[in-house]
Length: 374
Image (cartoon, rainbow, N blue to C red):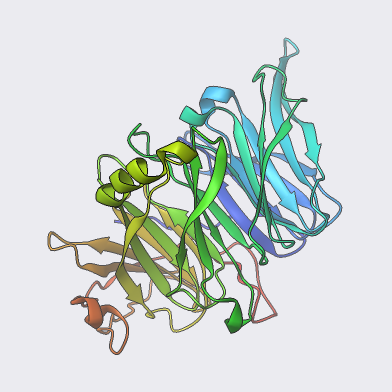
C-alpha cells in the first residue's frame, strides 16, 4: 500500500532534484531559484522544512547526501560551474537547538555547468564525483573527514562527450572493483553509445573505460547502479526515451587471460563484462527523467513526462515487469497494457500491475522539457 502526501515546497521556480538521506527521514530539494531546502519527517509523519538557503548563483541541478558515518553532509551542483559541499552544525543555546548549514568547500574546476554530483560508497572513504557538460568527470577526496574545508582533486576522466549523470557501483564486495557509470545527453547520434563504464585499478591507480553500452544511443537523463547484496553481476537502470535495465556480469575467464597476458604491464585488475539487456520498457510513452532503486536493489522506480512513477521488479524467472503505477493527481486507475515491439515482450515479459497511488508533485511546469516529477 502506498501513502500519498503533498508538500507545498515553496520554491520560487522549478524543482530539479529530490534526495533522501540514508534512513529516509530527511529530504533535500533543489531548484532553479538557486536554493536548497532541508525537510525532516516529524513524529506524525508530516514533512517540515527545517532549513532553506541560497546555495549557488544559478539553477541547482542536483543535491545528494553523504553516508551518515561522515556526519550530516550534502553536496550540490549548479549551472554556475561549481559543486559545493555543505555540513550541518548544531548548537544548543539552552532554550532551543539551532542548526545551520555551512559551506565547507566550493569546487570550481569545471569550465561549464556541473550536471551531477554523487558521493562514493562509504567503504571508499569520503569521495565525491562530479560530471560536467565539458565531458569531464572529476573525483575529489577529503583526506581528513574532520576537516571538510580541504578537498583534493584526485582524478580527472575525460569522456570526450557531454556528461549528464553519474552513478557509483555501491557493491561492498572486495571481489568487485570500484565502478562508475557515466551517461551522456549528447543529442548527436554519430557519437555512438551514451553510457560508459569506468573501473578503478588498484595497481595502476587509474580509472579506465572498460565498457561502452553501444545499445544506448538516445540522450541519457539519469543512471543508477542497483545496490548489490550478493549478486555476482551488477544491475544498471537507465533513463532515456524509455526505461532500460542492463545486467553487467564480470567475465572472470577474460580477466584471468588478461592477468596472464598483461601482467608485465601491470593491468591485471582490468576486466570486461558480459552485457545483457534485462529489460526495456516504453510504458511511460514519453521521455524518462529519473530512475532510482530501493535499498535491496530489487525494485526500480522511474518517472517520466507522463506524470507517473512506475515500479519495476523481476520475477523468479528474471523477467522484469511493471508492478505498480503511481500518479500524482489523485488516485486514478491506470490500466497497464502489455508492451509490444522492442519492449517487454522481446525479453519475455508483460506488464500487468494495476496498483495506483499518488506521489509527490513538487512544482508546476510550463515547458515540455521541464519535469517536476520525482
